[in-house]
Image (cartoon, rainbow, N blue to C red; front, side, top):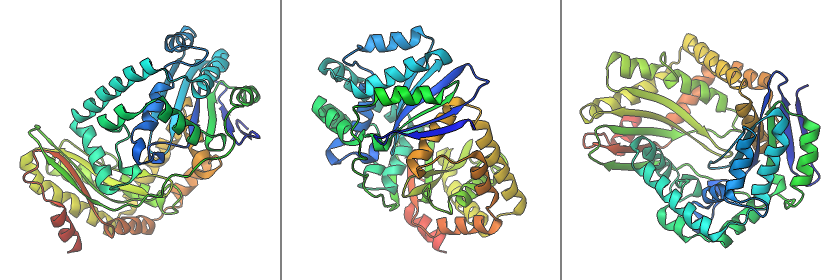
Length: 419
């Protein structure tokens, strides 16, 4: 069996999936703490920590970190999400040990130099500005804030200029010590990997991690609401959403199928009705974001101001029609798309390592491809209908940015749905 799992005495989980046909490996250290783990005065701190981890340790300065991995032909990266922070390395098979050593070094021996911190704060301010200059990115932050108001899970991951500038090295160290604990962390690797060697190295390299799980994040509550900003952009970006499902919810696979039927591809109802038949927009799709204890479903569309008055009613009518009567053929097609997407993703060692870590952090165990496919196969047309109807029973969320003076607002959406 290629999949192996070892839980170290500290609570740190090591999981690997050997792919013998590969000459490279993807590995990462995944912490079960992200933006929603932040306190009120810590907005943006999880993301700042991710940046600062690469800026020097007791053994390597920032330049040496970059040179060591790149001299071996490898690469490093990291990402912060609402619930997790991931630190990645891609290496040749003979350099897996080097990649893991660097990842451990930046997570256990970072010094958070003040000069580096000043420079990196400025980098993040530029990153925030870049999002603000990109309407189709910014509208998603607005959408999340409207859906989850006054909650860590609803705040922009990057923080604000004021919050980022307020942090010092003590704040970063405090967050790291509080949330980066062995019981809530995973070392995951896929590709040309040796499980026993990674276990041996991880035992040594992460020996200093605190052994408990640390505090759990604050529970999230989907609320729904409106965040609309009228600007002079050429196009309006519109998001309409409803309460989704958590990873652990038994109805999550059915909502996934509903999402694909409604707006998962060129054959989906939204694409065919809104773009192909009516030409009301260039891009339209449905999505769902699942978290540990909640979720959100949404439809994203971009359109000119002259089309908004027609676009929103068509979207709502299409959601309702799909919820009332999903067809057997389109449900079968959506399930085939989901299963193919899952199997295709497993051909990537990077995706495989990330998926395994997410499984451990979410369910405490890896889910096999067969188990995931079985969950999709078990979804019936009735399940899809129930998932769609449950969406429409929840409070709607509306976010829009651009020339939106003709956009139907949240009250009119509520009224239309109630009717």
